[in-house]
Amino acid sequence: MTPPPIVLVVWQDANVIDASPWADNVPVEFKPHIVQQVGYLMQQSDEGVILTQAWHPEIIAARDQIPAGMIRSVTFLTERPSNRKRASK
Image: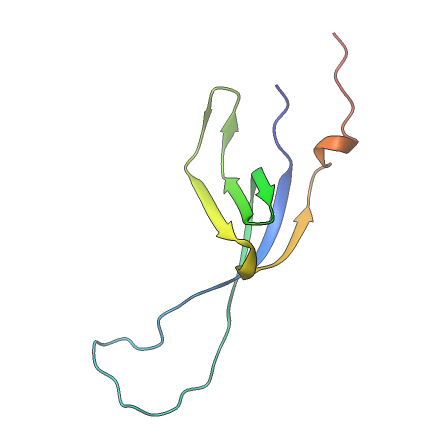
């Protein structure tokens, strides 16, 4: 079985602004929290992507799900499945 492609996903995460349970009710500057994540692309759809950090034909690491609305870009670091050559037997 061929491993899935490895991708770099750049995505904007949600984050907490205040460090305590109470904060002054004043305007704050919006500061995007941009994350860069590399992993094996297990699934990709209009809904988003699912990545894993480790892959073996029988077992994988815990998966991360990133919704499409948070994704800024997906860059393939290895060949896409359709571009791969099949191994000869």
